[in-house]
Image (cartoon, rainbow, N blue to C red; front, side):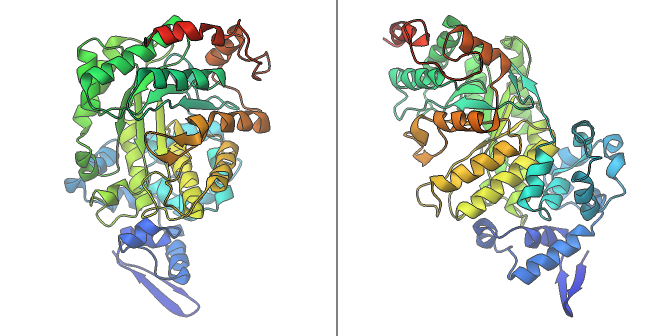
Length: 464
């Protein structure tokens, strides 16, 4: 089906809805690399005019990737909740934008709507929204998840403590973990990206983190971010698996390039649930995503990278995860060229994930060969805090010495808490106060022998 519009007596014709979506996207290097970006600003605006008039129902009948060719498309269509969709079923994309920004779109209304929205719908409406629109709407959405503490409450911000080490040295991981805990970070998860796929190494990391959590009675969860099949094996051997991690994408072919299928993820979730390690909830999955992953796997089928990213969220919500993290600038400048593109992508991802009912966090990051710097990350950090983001990363010094990229630090989280009045997960906040790491207002206290620092020698003994 072709789409047409005339602007200033110039006729613009688009081959199909997939092309309208691609041309309506804000400019980004990945779409130009794929050969699907708008050639001019006028063409981009024409595509947005067309997109605003597309009925939301059109996305249920005109699949961007054919139903018979892709299991994500089948998952979206087969799992669509028509009853939840009914309140907006009569709307166009433009009408939907206006409704989202209205007082009628309350937190309760948006939560009830989530199951009725497809990723293509939320990607479409994001393309005709300004940055402030994305912030305003996402800020109304609350997605609350639980395992050993509660993530996503209003006026709260959690932090993934990321104590990576280039050789998976247990002392190095333990030292970074202690550093983060003393800075009040770690309530989202203590999550290590291992340098090795060795099962003994992975098991040792899991056991060490679990011993820290159990010995100090920390109300948080651990995760070793290895491939899901490794985690299944670890769970089968009785290793202390809290969360199951996996990187996912928005097409079947992308996920196959990651060595994962929905069936494997089903098995992993059941394995984690069978261990019954959660104390207040059973959200046991942790997913990471990123714009550009489908194109880098030659698996985008001509669909723009932001829409592919939103489609990954449809897969994620099948598993009711504790955390979903868009690693926004990690893939590199081939996909998000500079700070402006990274900022926009981070806001889009957060908005789309929240509308689809996911606990979206963001690794606010960039690689050293991107046209971006820490000032750009500070900008995105503040904007996402204003948008009510569930969690961010806490990396020692914001410089990951294993993955070799720039992220956000424990100090950045403290800045957001002070600036926006954001609290930690309540169970974790109570633990910090009990350990005398923070005061009654959540501010850090100077270290003393009575704080966790007094347990440093005991912590060292874990890895002696």
